[in-house]
Image (tube, rainbow, N blue to C red; front, top):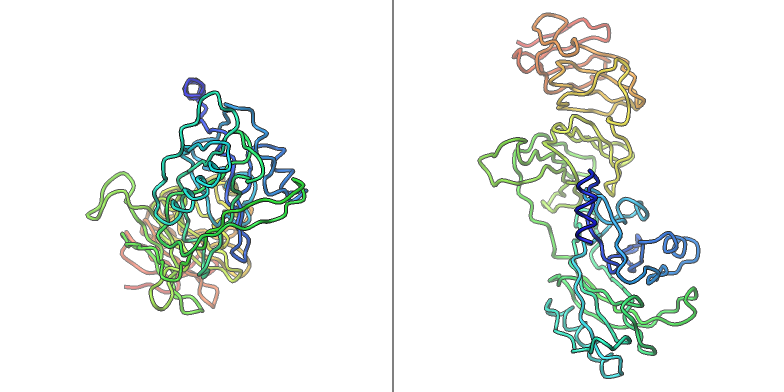
Length: 410
């Protein structure tokens, strides 16, 4: 698989090897219940979507099979199917422990799995002769929990399939999964669940997480924008690491948008793929508009972080492209008012990219009554005028819809 990966990269295909054990991902329902499902094959997708088979035909991959994902897309759950509820995901770095295919081997595997859930340490398995085809196996994996998508949920119950007591298991058959130990595990247990698509009863290992005292520790680094929301929460745009250079704070910090409640608890966050973000605007429908300044784009995301609109996906009607947009505000007609700093303009655009209003000449700085110089902010006033912070001209101006400056300070 390493050779195949190298060959693919040599011809410009970003790839990484993924073992057959990487086929299961966490799916969580809005109630907080969830299961592991396999998403690695078209048969698995069909089994889960159409027949409700939570095993999703795991084991259909041939031994030693290698699948490839683009390195920048992450697990399949983010790019392929359960995108409407991306509450958790895991990046697999799997290893396995084996146990004899006997009742005693099974009981030891169960005991070791429960010990791992409580201590975070994976006990060493048993020595299984290489010639022993039938044995029990636990596949461990690293796990990343995105707290930003949990919301107000306090208690989370995770369930995933465990090795079957009534039959032996092969390495490509039923495999039990667990993860690196989270400190907030409160209890574990085993329960039986029926799963008609596989004609029988399954044993599931269950873990309860208590997140009531768990809050992500976030340090602000160059916050650029703040809004007080109608519910009393505060929406903060944190710029993070300056592109192309270090700051006086710790290096490597990421740009992020966070919502904190009145007690300072982070109740929502988005930090996926932002670069030097400067502004965020919460819409009436709960979505959020973000000025992703370092990427020269404006995006709209929903409450679980799915990008549902991206300025990169539309062509501006004058053929230009955004250049370091500092600010973007939603208007009641669903237009966007964008302060396009390095294009020295403020534009109002429709969602299809049509520019319906503009002040400032695209790409041309100036200080007269029709030009701007690196503006940083613009807001639409109730009277229809637009107030602009014309930064490098050291002035604030109010512009009427016909482009006439009707007020200026100083």
